[in-house]
Structures are given as C-alpha cells and as structure tokens.
Length: 318
Ligand code: FAD
Ligand code: NDP
Image (cartoon, rainbow, N blue to C red; front, side, top):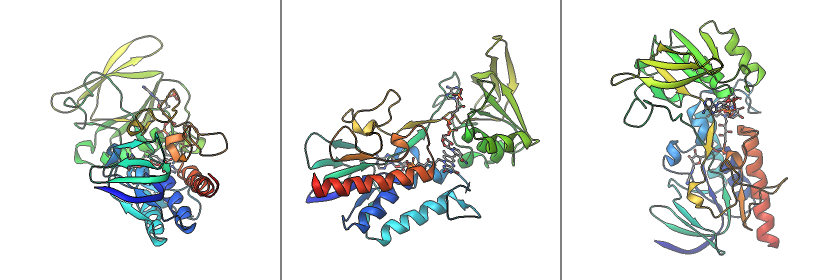
C-alpha cells in the first residue's frame, strides 16, 4: 500500500483553494496529486460551494453560476493540466520529517511539499433536543440549500439561527418553500454584507427575532416547536416550528493534523502574514482552513494560487 514514489506536491481538499493550487502546480510541471475527500467532514468533494445554489460574486460569470457547476469546472481544469485526483479522505499525516507521509484508508503517499486546503464545516448548536438521535435531521439541519426543498419543510414556519451572509442567504432560499422564515439572531445588528441584509429585509416572507436565542428544540419524532429566549429580559416562549436551520459559522477541518501544525484559538491553521507558509517548512495552507476573515470562493482561490507558488519556490530553493 505504501508508495515508493515521492510526490513533489500533494494537495488535500477539493474547494476553490485546492483546485487553484492544482492548476498552478500542474502548469509549473510539479505533477500534483489531490486528495479530494470522500464525504470528508460531511461535505461532497467540491467543498462548501456544492451546498449552495447561485454564486453571483465569482468574477467571470456575470449571470452567476450554480455552486456545484463552478466546482465541476474547477475540477475539470485541474484534470486538464494533468492533476491526479484521488477520491479519498486523508485520515492522518506525519509532518515530523521530510518527505511527509499521508494516509487515506487505501493508500500511503509521500510528499516533498504539502498544501492543506481542507476548508471548514458548518457548526451546529449544542441545545437540548437538537443532538444526533434526537431531532437532528428530523427537522433540524445546518444546510438549507441541501435540505430546504424536502417535503417536510414545505408550507411550514421555519427558523434560521445566525446573523451572517449564510443566514440571510438561507432564509431567502427557504422563503421559496416556507409559510414564513424567521431569522433568530443573538444581537440587534448583523455581520452579513449590506446587500444580503437588504434582500432579507425586503423579502415579505422573512421576519426577524433579534436579541433572541433558541434554547431548546421540541417534538415527538420530528421538530414541532422551539423554545426561544429574549437574551435581554430572559423571557422564554414556545413557538411552533416546522424546521430549524443553523447558519452560525464554520469549524476549520484540521482534526487530521493531530496538532502537528500551529493552529489559532479557533482551530484555524496559522500562516505567515502575507504568505501561505505554516509552522512546518514545506507545508502550506490555503482557503477557509486558514482564513476566518474573508472566507469567500475568490479569496480561497487566490490563496490556493499563492500556496502553489510558495510550494514551487520551496521546492526550487528549499
Ligand atoms: P471548502 O470549500 O471548504 O472545501 C474543502 C473540502 O476539502 C471539504 O469540503 C472536503 O470535501 C475536502 N476535505 C476536507 N477534509 C479533507 C481530508 N481530510 N481529506 C481530503 N479532503 C478533505 N463564497 C463566495 O465567494 N460566494 C458565494 O456565493 C458563497 N456562498 C456560500 C454559500 C454557503 C451555503 C456556504 C456554506 C459558503 C458560501 N461561500 C460563498 C463561501 C465559500 O463556499 C468558501 O469560502 C469556499 O468554498 C472555501 O473554499 P476552500 O477551498 O477553502 O474549501
Ligand atoms: P459568519 O461567521 O459570518 O456568521 C455566523 C453568525 O452566527 C454570526 O452572526 C454569529 O453571531 C452567529 N453565531 C455564531 N455562533 C452562534 C451561537 N452559538 N448561537 C447563536 N448565534 C451564533 O458565518 P457565515 O456562515 O454566515 O459566513 C461565513 C463566510 O461565508 C463569510 O465570509 C460570508 O461572507 C461567506 N458567505 C458568503 C455568501 C455570499 O456572499 N453570497 C453566502 C454565505 C456565506 P455574531 O454576529 O453575534 O457573532
């Protein structure tokens, strides 16, 4: 199972960062390998954009493009320049000495340089009733675009928790199916971009419950109601609910690194300012796994390009 060959560049991930890194590395004749994951971190190969509909802010697509279609095109472009893609999840790495060693469930690879582009995963709220084996996936989801069109949500009163772009976008998407969508947010101002906020405010099917939290999910076999709390007064009330969607941000996919790279307090890979070098020479990081500020497809792609150029320089000069 162990490969004798030592790869020059191995890329872990499958979003815009990974494929941009592959395109640049392949064109630099570094013959890159991508491990794109097999439902790694619960997301299909292609990453977070496979869970969304229209992407309207990626340059070059003035009419917009569906997220999955954009990622199919990125993958095709990686393949076009000779990238080898394994549909396997990297389960562990050994970064203690070079060449580095990577393990999936069916192969062991060695690599002179490594680009980590494993992205981030939607977070869930740890409230009574919402756990696995309770009402999770029985009316509770962390991906409106993946689940919102299901018959159980049609014509229902749906709730979205969060105040970022995801909450606005998911509420807009759900409003096509729901009787009403309520955005529950813990503060009275949003971090979402102005345009996304405005769309939600202009949508007559979207209501807002500000300075509130969801404290419990209730139902017999499927979600039927939510207990919400006014975070100012502490007053609680029960609201009938056909669906609850978490849009409360993401966790970086860094578990497989097993503490071998420096991470920040939230688990994001730390990179040298202005570049993609991590705490281990020859290991670079790109995209959402190292970026909690911008977290956009285009910034992920940009840092994927930087990582490939950094890896190329590292291989040339050490
Ligand atoms: P990701 O897209 O996070 O993909 C990384 C992938 O790598 C994982 O999903 C998994 O498939 C794979 N992986 C993880 N671990 C492993 C492993 N151990 N081994 C192998 N493979 C692994 N941005 C925009 O610019 N415009 C938008 O309109 C937009 N809409 C969005 C809508 C939603 C609902 C969400 C959630 C995000 C949206 N974003 C949007 C943000 C954008 O999707 C991300 O910024 C971008 O996808 C990050 O790319 P990435 O390359 O870092 O990795
Ligand atoms: P964000 O981190 O931007 O927002 C998360 C929201 O959830 C915040 O409002 C936060 O509240 C709230 N929150 C976090 N934890 C809890 C909790 N435990 N209980 C209640 N509320 C909580 O994440 P998003 O997923 O919205 O966005 C991530 C990135 O993806 C952003 O960069 C965004 O721009 C991008 N994106 C872009 C889109 C587009 O351009 N069309 C669409 C979707 C995402 P608080 O504000 O109080 O911290």
